[in-house]
Length: 249
Image 1 (tube, rainbow, N blue to C red):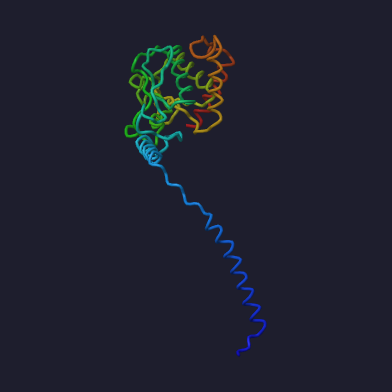
Image 2 (image 1 turned 60 degrees about the vertical axis):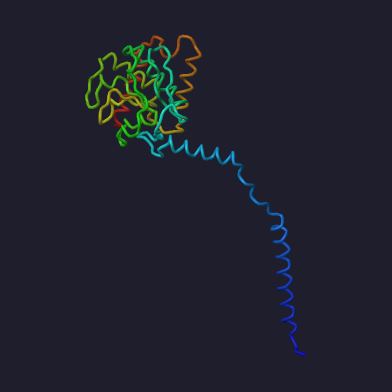
């Protein structure tokens, strides 16, 4: 009978014990592993429709100010035709929510204090295929800009507004804390263009929206209320904002 050294016997016993312990740990886990539940047909269909809707609406591309451009309007995206109270406009296609609140406020102040608007005077969303992607006009495609009377103030031309009208524009921009920029201050001038000048999630946008909504809850505040744009306080704020925005062109 072959003699096996005691050390070898002990080593084999230890290996066998370790293997047994490992197997005893793995088997219960394997036995108790639950298979993934199949996705119900209704859920699969809902997912498919959601993905198809996303593909139909989204471009995956940002406009000049960082907001995503969308292919369609009034069709399950973020951009819808929204009313502009107090004006004869049929509405303006803008991004719903905070952007809508700010741009509608601007359009209303323009109507009340600069020049009375008529149907068709304000253009909101435009298809991404019709705007130049590297310029601020691309913000129209993300629903974060408006063109006010683009035929009256064609791109590339200056001095389309009278001095008092320009004073009101500066007052509006200061009132909105620089969240909105005027195309008249851009290197490629577009005096009809007004657009959101902060990226998605910027706290300044939310702060301005809170301010506008507070005005809406108080009689004698907000768009349509007489404002002394020539007061020292408002003029100082407007001039400061003008210098800041012109310097960033």
